[in-house]
Image (tube, rainbow over all chains, first blue to last red):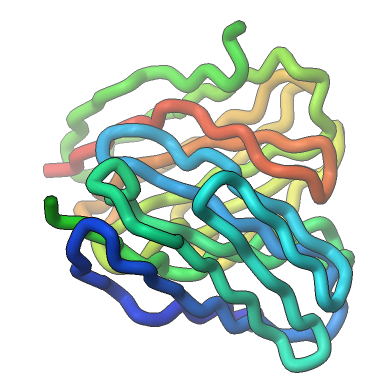
Length: 112
Length: 111
């Protein structure tokens, strides 16, 4: 059974704080790591796709890194804003059968 | 831009009833997926189809069946609904390992 773990489960920060979450995944047969942002009452939207060990991606104040050898990825948000409040999902894609497995998500709440 | 379209958006069923959730995508993607979302559990994969004509079980396939009718359509069927299947169901599609595009979800309640 492929298990993708995210921590923490939830996070409450003040506006302006920087924060980071962790995604751990099995590295055997790994092909790609996805990060999604999921706002309440909407559907998930892709932030990043990373495939190579050492990959770093950035989109505005949000960035992500990938370590495929040890099986983890970090998502960073610099200077959190209330509009960053959402659930952040990571998912690992495996090249055996094309299956994407999601973690349980990190719920971020940013207070003004 | 339609993207991924799911129907219906809401449904209430009685225990033992059957129904089919429909999903269609207009992006010519090979891969399509069905997930369920439950509180504190993220998205759990029910079934997926890596290409037209193939389907495979995900993490939680029991109680469900799927049909990849053609490249565009991937349906999910509950043969005999149970209260444990009350959930929000999401369909998604992708061109292989690239980011998934999600539908708006189907909120299903089973009494």
